[in-house]
Image (tube, rainbow, N blue to C red; front, side, top):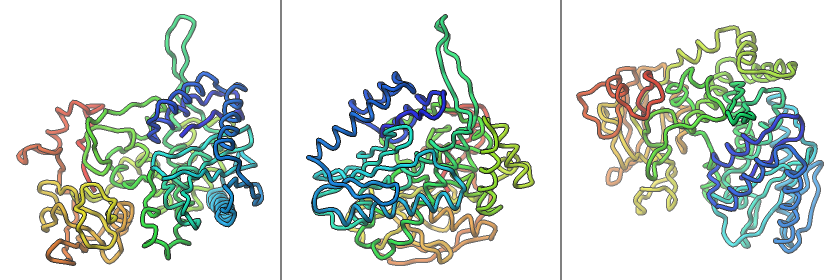
Length: 472
């Protein structure tokens, strides 16, 4: 993704350009070069000239696109795809308006362009959203020749609408003080940290999730035909378990944070040590889900209203506003947040799509168990790698987010019933005890050592108090 700087203030957003490119996995050299150009352009006219040149090249490359207008949303589409384009424009406008009504966000853009770009095959890495001008935001949706419906298009563009709404919302939070970095005339690097990233990323992810839920409510009939549409590529699937692990360190998250690097192809759902950047995104999202579930959606709207009344809000000011709105010590609430350990590490299971899952499994959508932690509650009741978790206390678990939400709802019980599918045995139900007696360990660590002992010599831990990573 290329994310161009916002011209609405004098502050530079070059740091956001780099973080967005890094987060969304832009892996091609020409994308990185574009980001470097954006950084150099800062908030000058060159940045906007670049976006206009890209837009013109996009239209030329597509061989000329027709357009259709729906309010302040303009959709550009290849010949013969007018019906899909109209639906895309209408649904985008509906999702955007729903987010504004639910959260009270005020958009800085008054015009939105959707480009349906024809490609032979859509890749998960194909994602572009950019600011075309001071008041216009552009989004590309890739469309294959045989795509015959709106559902087919959005199912293959798995980052839409969550990540798109995320970026638009983050652009619109103009009252928040951003982290800046500059070099003085002596060559010394300086930083000004506002410590608002937890709010920007958490609120934006929450807003994107609201848009995603709006889309999925209308697409239940299409799940079997378009299974991947349920799984958002950038979805923070472990909000509560990661929030418990990160805790109050979330409020120290700045724009220039770089967590420990993990070697090899490691699934984000597997255990990892230290505080990875992805942990903070998930924790920030979990924070807003915690506020919503504890104090209601209206509280988030009230918090945002009070922030808008400030000209320049830093992390301290935001925390004070939240304390006043919810009536408790907000930081203490996060510090004392508890969430049950299960020892399960799972990937969403889609036949033909799930990494590491045997291709001959015959089961409806569920969670494929990659690993079960030693001495964990899951291991104690006999759950093992290769099982597929299909429900928790009767609630269907298609994604890790479903599992975490169901566990969050029932976490004050002594135990929960886990529905499993096991090859050779079919559907099973086990009752898993919940509690705090499980201390998770890193992979390959001896069962004779405690979690605290393991944390003490973790070379990737960012502080002496860092805990080893664990599952749900």
